[in-house]
Image (spheres, helix red, strand yellow):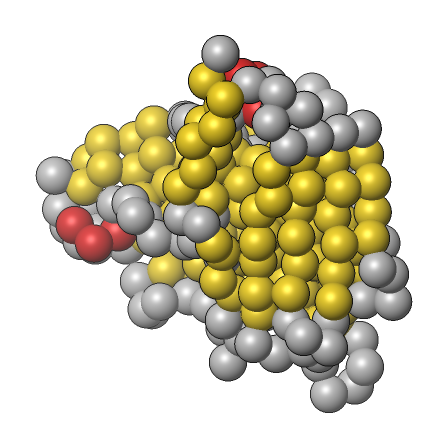
Length: 117
Length: 116
């Protein structure tokens, strides 16, 4: 059974710092990995999706890396801002026996990020 | 609208009642997913629909839970004889196709269900 773990559970940093959020998964047979942010009382906003054949994806101040063999992904946020405060979730999509993908995502518990001015 | 729409946004009901939650996916999205987020826990997969294929119901926690989807449009999640442990935020997501590895899932804002 795939298990996804995110460390740390919570992180508080001053504005302007660069930071790294960690995600690990137990089953390396993944189809892709997706990072989301969730604001209080809201749904999930997709940030980055990394295919299993890729090593990293970038969008603005965000960079996500994937090391499938070691079962790890990191989300790097550069020059953090108070507006980055949210819960960050990673989720993996598994490969099935036929080589295609199960549709469902398996989520970590999230990292609660607070960026203070 | 452009995003996934869920209704109601909040629902409070008494234990034992039935509830129905609705999801309108993004137009053109053939895949639709339901997840549950209980307080202090991660998101749990419930069910997903892909086009005309049989839905994957492997995440439904009990036979009190069921879901339907009409074609490639609206879906309803029904919980019968609600229990207090059913209290959670129910999130719906859609994507262009479950078999395409490049398609992210897009989420609605969820329905917050509270069972008294």
